Length: 87
Image (cartoon, rainbow, N blue to C red):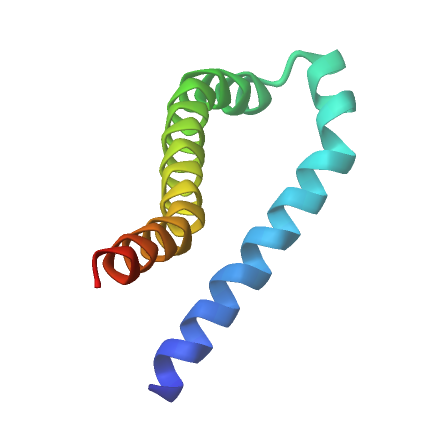
């Protein structure tokens, strides 16, 4: 368990460092026509629609669950009211 925590922490730290480095260096790399930056941009363009699709699907699922939770107490009180009326 400790090794997994260490690996996850390492991956997150390195990932954050890369993001910060690219956010600082990207404009100058783009101006110079860096192939690496062009590849990163191309990869991001391909990945962005996929990420948006998953985000939208997840948001719809969360909305559906939230509406179910909001409707559940209402349905319960209606059924209890009908049962009480039937008695």
